[in-house]
Length: 294
Image 1 (tube, rainbow, N blue to C red):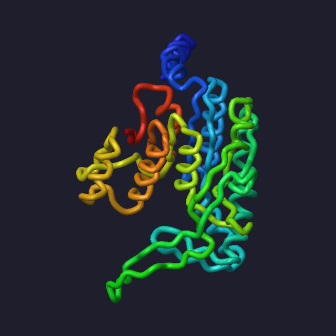
Image 2: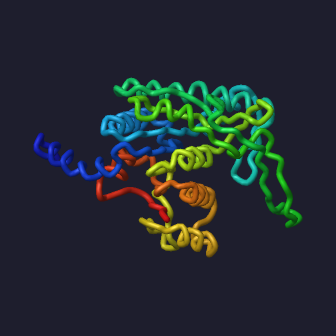
Image 3: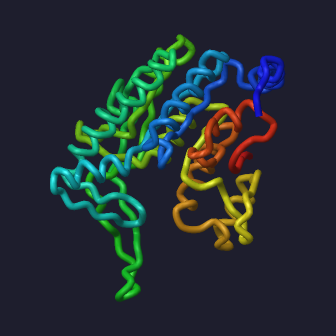
């Protein structure tokens, strides 16, 4: 179907109320999953982020890079293990993680945004003491003995302190920050931080209007595998307790709850593989994914 100039004008006009809703507001977008690996989707994402900035919305991009890290580790012959959904990160691995996340991936996203007409600035949690992290650990149940034990995840961290002064110098000045989830420790070391957790901490510290968690699934699904469009924090907790929300969706929803409790207005879990998912969520009444709110 051909879209006429009149159709385009009508679409832009219909987006006006949503642009006004987010005028001068901060929106943190966690960018990851398969959408990062496909060139066409990556360039479309960059254009959408530039469009938000042009519409007087303040986007902050936080990215992951698990597949790219794994590919580099394989090239270097470094074995990698996982526990409780997190990569066990030894000294050799954390060097690769920092190189890939704060280096090649970060600068590729910056380049895509700049090529789309934006002005992106690539940073990581170490820059300006943006994120100070503490060592993370996880409890897992050994399948053989059924005994719970604590797993040492190595150089995996959890945000302990967020200092957004460096971001405040960037946001609102026609610049788009692109953040890699690598953080400093109190003694000056390096921690690998889960990108969802990192994005939630940044959004909370900025009191963002929205946190968008781009994933490879449509959002939270009910027991019939139908998309749940909207959840309150209490409803989300109940769905975790009764097992409706399970597996890898649990930490995403817990990140959403933590961000909301820190002052984020709402968190949306949505499928980043859907073209223009960010614009569908923010600038149309259709929306996308699952909105979690107070």
